[in-house]
Length: 303
Image (cartoon, rainbow, N blue to C red; front, side):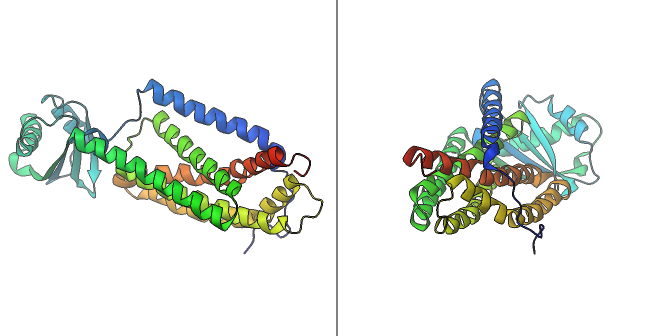
């Protein structure tokens, strides 16, 4: 199935200067936002704290719960529905005392407001992540991304050539940095779930990039006197229908998850929406642009 009956003749490489400028601005905005916020906004997985899950007889008002928690001095709290409107997940920064005491303090703060009775609230679980555990998780999350990148370099260097591997890695780093910047600007938490989303973004973007690289390599074998820029433009246009179809269908799924999947996977699906869009863009403009840059340095006349 194809969207275009004929191969398009869009001059993608002619717009590479504008694309690089746009990407640079997006990354710069993200970096500035991270610096202004004093770093990423780590969730309980990385920063440490306590998680309390409550079950209510009747669906509660989130604002009522938030008002009740302000009176017990546990620092900043995040409240969200978990599975159903009767189940509430509360994340608090501090965790002095035993876990049972933290859960009891949360429950008592809600009962003390006079809007709930003891039998209206059940403490289903209380979990704590200490600062040291959070630090270890941050390090392991970073290592998981680094190992993924190393594996990609080895595979693409073997499957194609070294410059293709570097081009793909630059595109992947671009995707992660832009998505991370969007998260910072939107003031969203960075958790283990988001790390999983980033790894999914890396895999998706890489798959799209390899399809274009494979067509570039195929066309390079029979290019004759045609310049590299023209070969890349032709290759991108030849795979454009496939790129749009793949990205479009994937995007429909993640958008559905974003709007219908519930609060618990809201940030995960948000990261995937951004990642699919940015990954499609980088496969066309960022990875291919680096191939042109590499060729210009190695063989100026040939490129």
